[in-house]
Length: 318
Ligand SMILES: Nc1ncnc2c1ncn2[C@@H]1O[C@H](COP(=O)(O)OP(=O)(O)OP(=O)(O)O)[C@@H](O)[C@H]1O
Ligand SMILES: [Mg+2]
Image (cartoon, rainbow, N blue to C red; front, side):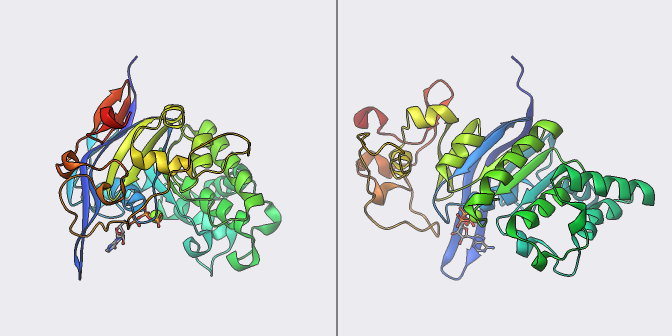
């Protein structure tokens, strides 16, 4: 089977200079994404999920590593290329209110990227705008409404329509439903799924919510302090989590059956900071299985087919 890779990053790093030292927000990530699929990125707050997403699509420039998109090296690009990439790679953020211009109506917001691209005439822009509104389920009656007049779900639909206006191939969904009412979340997730099918979109889906990622993604990466510590097909992760951090993460999900026995792994120790990290396993301070060997730098190993884990004590911990 030939894999149709849309984007591949290798050794991707993004460091920030901060007053207290260098923040290793993303610290050597390898990731290959198949076209038309959804890759979930999970991990606790501050582990680098958003920075990884933003760096992949050049919203922020990488410190080190390479990015290949549709077979082309785009690690460093000039202005013209960047403009082209902006159309093919889009991002949807958590909070639709701050992503929208408060002075633009729903219609103007969706129309704007079509206008700016200078690729279409007036009539075509109008037709496409109306088609986009229909595609994301925005009623024509609200086309002249401003963001503050709309609920979170409608705002996020506008954000999605705008992101899709120029037919992107890759969309980074950065917690796209976590700011929405629970009742609306499922509608937006279903919309994103339908759009993926219709437009053959590839998603990088960033979330804290393990049940959302299980439902949506075919592949999953678990991040911890700037590194991917485990990655595999989604179902594998839920059936057989291997990294001690992943086990703790999964043990915290509420289970529907209260009689089902399960062991909650409670993490001890403080969250280590991504600023000037020590060599060795980043999870060292909190890991119940930490030992001397973990002080050495770790690499990802293929523990079983297509299931990679960054832990040197897998055999011992079983
Ligand atoms: N512009 C910046 N300047 C300095 N540090 C930054 C910057 N952006 C992010 N960071 C730091 O990089 C690390 C990763 O942040 P990031 O926002 O990518 O995490 P995240 O996993 O998306 O978290 P959350 O789940 O809270 O959204 C954090 O320690 C954060 O403080
Ligand atoms: Mg984030």
